[in-house]
Image (cartoon, rainbow, N blue to C red):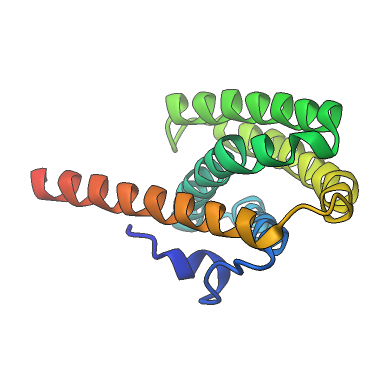
Length: 169
């Protein structure tokens, strides 16, 4: 499954002048994917939603860890450090889910735990961190351009990897 840069945000692309809005849209997408996964009994829906959750969380994590958090660290260092710790916990859960496979009976419980951890993290970012970043006077366009470039490179790399995988099968 190839992901287009614009597909992640409903065809809207990356709002360069509003990078926090891009992150909010990512949060909304993942929330909808968790709803699809957790509220379905259809294994095909669960498998597709699960793959989308993993892919989107990994991309979002890389974007925040590599670009966003280092650039906004000065807005509230201890809060950013706490958010980074939460990301580490989510990465550990992602690794556990990937190791167990889609048909493992514990998979549903792990996705439920992952959903709770992610949504708690989203609340901290949106209610505490984002307002501090907005009030910091930071150049949002510069941040947005950096985030857009990083994300485009990540998605291009995923598409290339998927193409190489498809060519082998």
